[in-house]
Image 1 (cartoon, rainbow, N blue to C red):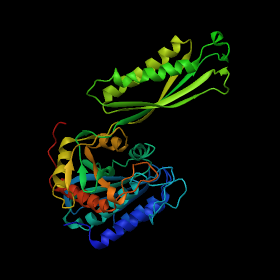
Image 2: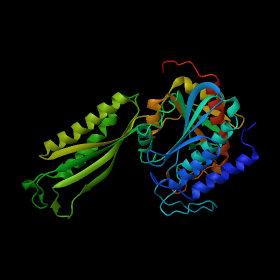
Image 3: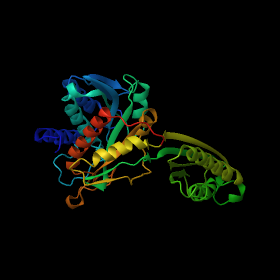
Image 4: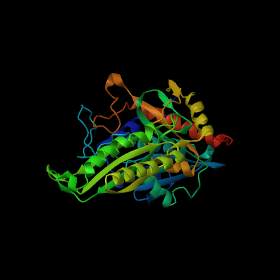
Length: 396
């Protein structure tokens, strides 16, 4: 039987739709944060606001002794317009759309807080609710950690979920080890004297060098990465020139590198720099490579992932429990998982028959709202299972 009563279900859907209609971009989540703080305050929790800019942290202390568990939800929307496919809760904000399910994550965690607060007298331990800004820009978790979001009290474990439209409604995926990839951006500047397009022998051409660099970078994965270690590299930016008959003196090139292993991450970053600088030098040009380091990979601890899998098998609305998904997408939940052992799991939210299976980060993204109650049930049950009998730590 679901823990989500009919009244709570109505609140859950209404809250998600309200947040969906009023999306807020990274570090601008003031309305969302105010709703979160008011809701948690009404539950008589200790609430901190403006944590790491617009983040909110609330603490529920049970009446019985026990460990501390942290539950996290991200709050920000994406900077794109939502397509109109007849949904009554379409975004009312131009250039902003909850295209990744964060509105659902917030609604789920608030209802989880309501259910757990109602069990305070029998709760063995403490629950910290963390509502994070700016996941989409991979900056919100770092700011909250720097602002002591994990320090008072210090969690013993953490859990979070992500609604996932690559999985059908009723499926839950919890995979031990790396789940989301590290995300790093590289930006190269190649410079030379420039010159006349009709007299190429008098200068050095950064465009020709860049063409060779782009092709050579494809070998970073195909020839510098062990075949059994996943990685991805994409060049997504190439800017040069102002006229059709001028060899430019400057070229900018950029891309992204995704990896799941810290050692491989460092080696491939060094390989990118060596290829760019070396090929530019062969062409008589100078090159400088700069990195915009994003976040490390999200790594789930094995015993806590097993706990999620075991609990999910007992939730009646879950049809299938898997451990299949590993994505080269990134999520700064990784920083929380580096500080606190935990599990970041996926809750299937797609319904192809109803057309609710649009890709994440697309204008047509939407999900089956029945996934909300599944998320609430699973997160409540996982929390209570951990607080009642924390797994004994094992080596991953």
